[in-house]
Length: 226
Image (tube, rainbow, N blue to C red; front, side, top):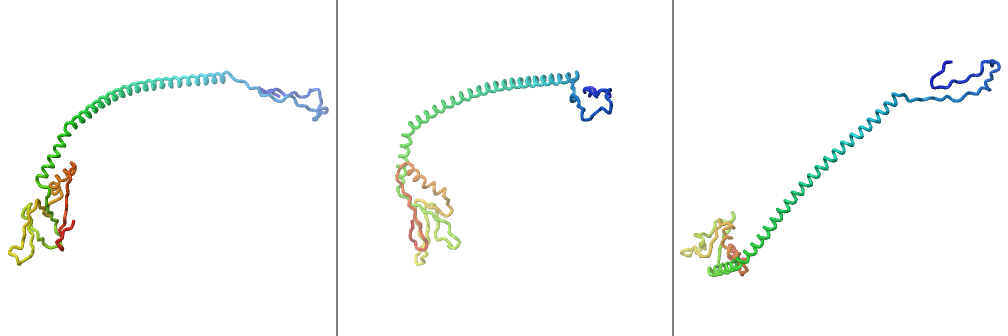
């Protein structure tokens, strides 16, 4: 029987023993088979190359990481310096603006102190002028007629007179004229009306007492209504 590499050969009984004297029950096997492993030189070389490659890769990654870290650190330092320079510039500019604002506030206070007496005097003159023109003024404003109201019995010769048709045929002249401080026809808007009452509003804002009393004339009863 040929030997196989890596295995111990099994020892058989001596050749002097006869087949008749061989007893199956008396047979005792030898030591168990043992596998003998061996690492060849090629395997050891491959393992060494893998270890070297792993070490080189780790070193290369470490170098790249260090270079990236140094580059980022340099960029962060430059950005920090740039931000500090900008912040210092903005701070100086805000200081200049604050100084100008203080000067403007001081100038405004001084100007107000100088013109305050003039404003009070102007208010007094304005109120005296309004009083000289007349404390009581009578204005008349006519609204446009609705379609179901028929024709108007009021005429507007000018801005200070109105002419009312009384409808009394017994009179030689059934139309009567009334002179007022101001007459506003149906075509006059709110802006023109406010221009005439604005002096009264200004006097009220200046602290003087004024009164605007309105009365609506009803066609059916000819009675006034506030």
